[in-house]
Length: 456
Image: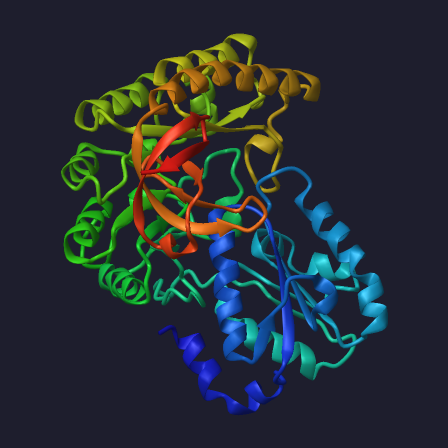
């Protein structure tokens, strides 16, 4: 248990400031790390007698867990805070806080620009959240609190906190990033890279399995650069979880091509089907020239070599990737290299975005920015090119029977849904009693990401 949580439980005086029966609403943007951080916030606040609600008008406390990866993130925060003005007018004791990457990035500027915000906290300060709220309440109406310091020298010792882990859940194994890609703000908003001790991760997985979890996703900005204080690398961790826990499925995201090696591939190959054959491996650009400007640490040819290594050892591998179009200096030929790489690699799913300048990053200072209209055109063409690839790859699933881990029931559609080991969302008719079980489903209609099927 982290020291900040121990302090929360020990400081009864501070806890008394967080009155019973208060209600919290958290608005979440961005990546799976943010989703996981939100779950951690809810768990911490539950210890401090806050109950979650589904709409902001029900809340005594509103937190915006923000993301700064895409365009105009600060404006989005201000826009959302503005929507809560009437709620604040009706209830002057309503507390509004901003966390996540925008909180880390902007700090005091958020409160200076929006007096409706009562407190701001950074990505390294989530475990201090109950204390931050208590300090804000002590300050009374108009009191402001900012807590956004990085704790670079402290080890990454944190227990996975999940209120209701369910069938599938996330387990953080690393945080931060040391790669400093020229387009990416993560090193500035999440800090330098840290890895959790291997045994801490193992303990979390054992506890989650005991609570009914069937699948874990190991989470980090660059999971495959994981290195425990005992010397174990990511491949070692992955194999230890596969061999020594009763979890049924293991996934991970996101991996970096420069750190993807034969050892990791071999561990995946010999531990199927427990380790899913799905790999998310961002290439960002198909042009070596642009990859160098991005500071990605590999060339187009090296990325293709990694893909060949993977496919040789794991013939049934399913790939997805991240792509940026319109990076500064990207020519039409550079863009066409990206399209050709999609066609050559054959990712079944792509997550593609237009480049947008981020504060503190080197690429934001490049003078050869690409016109927005060109970015729009290239993004549309990329999606169109992948649509052809994705539809062709999806055909192989028609008529196949896949093992689906049932995750939930869609009340509106009246059917079950779950994922295959290929990370496909599959919808099919069935009884709620199947939730949490692995069942065979024959695919009747296959698309790139979602499918329909019949229970066998």
